[in-house]
Amino acid sequence: MTQAPFPSWPDTAADLVNVAAGRAPADMIITGGIWVNVHTRETLPDHDIAIVQGRIAFVGPSAAHCRGENTQIIEAQGRYLIPGLCDGHMHIESGMLTPAEFARAVIPHGTTSMFTDPHEIANVLGLEGVRMMHDEALLQPVNIFTQMPSCAPSAPGMETTGFAITAQDVAEALAWPGIVGLGEMMNFPGVINADPQMLAEIAATQKAGKTVGGHYASPDLGPAFAAYVAGGPADDHEGTCEADAIARMRQGMRAMIRLGSAWYDVESQITAITERGLDSRNMILCTDDCHSGTLVNEGHMNRVVRHAIACGCDPLVALQMATINTATHFGLEREIGSLTPGRRADVILTSDLRDLPIETVIARGRIVAQNGECLVECPHYAWPRQARETVNMARDLRAEDFTITAPAGANAVTANVIGVVENQAPTKALQFELPVTEGRVTAHGDVAQIALVERHRATGGVVNALVSGFGYTGKMAMASTVAHDSHHMIVVGTDAEQMALAANHLRTLGGGITIFKDSAELATIDLPIAGLMSDSPAREVAAKTDAMMQAMRDCGCTLNNAYMQHSLLALVVIPELRISDLGLVDVRSFEFVDVIVS
Image (cartoon, rainbow, N blue to C red; front, side, top):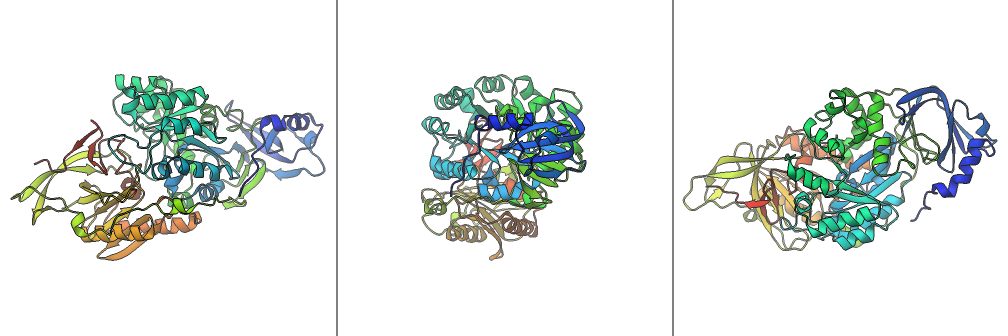
């Protein structure tokens, strides 16, 4: 299914001018609202907005001169008129939904623009997978702008992906109509060390006049950070404290601060604005990322804005961080981000700027949601067979595949253990003394086993290590083919038999997330597209997600949204310790380390 492209400003300029001058009627007029002007940080009562061809033609105290016989009139009734919200950095795949179903889920929350990096599917299906995401994104009734993934693999030599993205792929994709820049440059050591491929990708993006996304997941704010900034990335979302946000803004980057399902990095960084009084134009709100349960039950960018306000941010400043700041960063301030002439008519009607109830959503000049209900079609792409058959395992696995062998004669060992940190993406590199049973290192206390099962090339490879922080008890296992960013299969468990059951179930299913306890299946989310996404409605996926979260609690886990931590345990570009299909990686030094120390 195809959809006509949204008309450009040149296509509509004559209509915009004629409506604004009163020589032609508007298609729609929103009347009697409080205009929230994010350019001047003002609220102006008793204003109207006149719209034609999906764009704003006029904003003023009265648009009566724009009214025609067939003009649709929307009575604002004294409510605030705010721009549609923008998510500055996100990955649709992490919602476990396709672009169409993600759009359907977030439109009622007032998100009308998303800047997405489909590097998850790039790791599984390469450039063709990116094209599929891009094509479905362009079908939607809201703005989904795509950033071409930059790093697949995210850390060359540290992991093996299904496909690799090349500088030639980047150059090709930059010519596609919906590509607005380069996705997050996760290979920060490559940039710091002037890796030719990384610099070629950045150069191609800058030559095209587009934005380079950043990802500097290191606490080192010295020369290494300076080298990264000099390499070209224009923003960064990996900050976790006030000093991180300040350093990025001082060096000319935009600090993207995130509130996702599990990443709570707004409160610790927004103090750069609320307490230090720095210029808020260089700070952007984003999610990075929200799973379907959060989208359905809590919201999307409206949730982030409310949270920023609750953290002490002025509501108008918070709105700027989710609208005009984002649009300006991507060079789209003439298209989106404010309620001013020429821009796309993406408008939210709300009765309260602090609590931000999303009562009416208008996108591209038509009502798309009312009181939490999506009112428009979100067309689906015809996902081919190759995108639905991506779990390639050579054989069913056995308990013996999930074995960590101890040195001969040892009764106990000291082991390197991945330490999960609640509500943050980074992990800790820990060491524990663990018992040995029949020559095998066994899960003990809060330490569970973790395995990375190769699922792209059917090699049969299984890498075993240890993880702590989930709090699992009893005999259980959780397996997922969502394993950022290489997206092999992550299995975490306290019992090898359960780990084999969970892994084999996902092999049969063709991808997803599942939890087994005492040989019984507690919960499963089937994700047939690339092993990452479902094309079912968000509410159905959210119900399964809720069941999964309950199953994790039933297995002893009390962490907030611990699934997100589970899914990132193979992300070998965020410190400190991660697992890949090639071994256990110390991300501080980008070196492999042994599981058993002594």
